[in-house]
View 1 (tube, rainbow, N blue to C red):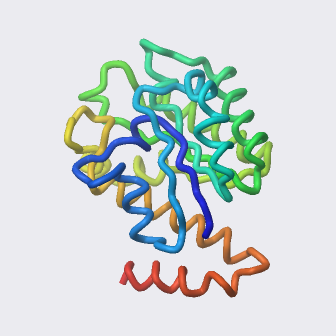
View 2: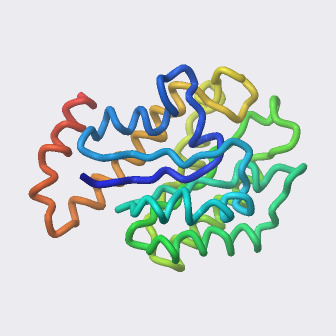
View 3: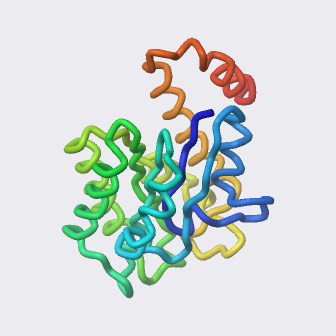
Amino acid sequence: MTTVVCFGDSITARKEGNPSPALTYKLSQKLPNYNFINAGVSGNTTEQAIERFAADVIAKKPDYVTVLFGSNDSATYRLVDLELFKRNITTFAKVIGPSKTILISPPPVDESLQENRSNESLLQYTTVVREVAEETGSHYIDFFTAMYSREDYKELLVGEKNDGLHFGEAGYDMLSDLIAQKLIEINLNHPKKGLLEKVIGLFFEKEK
């Protein structure tokens, strides 16, 4: 079974009313032949995450790792500057291995509810994540653009806390779809893709 570790902050960790963290719960439903491990810790910046990286990610011997940070790194009260953020994200990608790494840009925020985060700043962190993906050859998901380009993006950001940052079902549906589609895309190019036909069929059947 393919093991995927989802590494991140509260965006990765929150349950939002689900039996377990929303992201990995939804992914497990969409791709039941995969083993999803949640390695999200609320409040983490990349500086804190790098301290637990070996134990929470590498020790799990994953086939793939999603890396989603930036929401806290960009916050004015705990700012991790862009250069250090880039260095940390690059470290994650190189140690995991670019072919196994799926870098995800941070989501936008509802600025009317967020005093310490701005979409202008988050776009800068998104640019860094994209640059690292290009420079290392890692896989990339532009979550920021996927959500921010929607006219109703603020509605997608409504969750239990309703703080303009921690989203609920709609946001996790979007994020889990993007990750599931990326995993399918990667595995379609895998030399053993024939073994994955059942998994892919299950996903698209659920999407109908």
